[in-house]
Image (cartoon, rainbow, N blue to C red; front, side, top):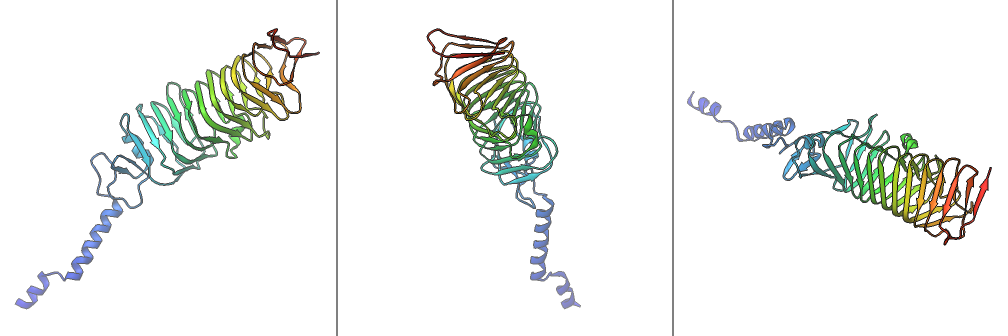
Length: 327
């Protein structure tokens, strides 16, 4: 009996090692080891994001936990159909750290409803149904990365760098960037094969630098304006349409292989600088009934201008530009 009692009260060493492994696996699988601010110290799969040394199972959890002026670092590629709402009201940065974010849902991938958010270092942000949708009173700043999908902004949108394209998304037929607020572009390359690069519907846009291209499968224009735009630099490889409101051009390069660089349907365009080229049309501008073009500077490289009998073109006397009038 004494020997039997000793045997049953001492677990076998192999059994103890097995039990320890089971307990460890249970902790890993259930994610019971949790840090003080809600992050995951040990998780079943690799966490998606981190704030400092604290890791989070999902980017959404990191967004909910982020404090003012902090940076969320994305740790791995993410594919999701869940829309991410940025609603903390704080100012913070999401560093995609060279990772890819692919959204497969039916709405915009990111919806900014409050606060100020900076996005940078994305290998690819991809969404066929829309990339960003921002509410009035918010601020979104975009730096280097590749962005594929439509951007709709009703707040303050600032773009400093990056490559922006339609990614084959049909929603981009309505414009790669649809601005209803305040837009500033200081760099980047913008390509839309399906429609205009910029649909400036309301608010104001300031274009300081960047390359804007429409590949001609859609609207065959790089900008369509119905509000106010100021252009002080950049390269524009397709026509600019002013359908309402006004555009001021102080500098930049405006090139059209097939079309006409400036098309004034309604409203007014004022030109004080810039270089204008048109390979086939031979025209720098076309002005329709009730519209107006004022030219006080710029280099037009032998191009002429055209207006209807109801349109108006005013050219400073020192510039030698031929104006054609059509019925």
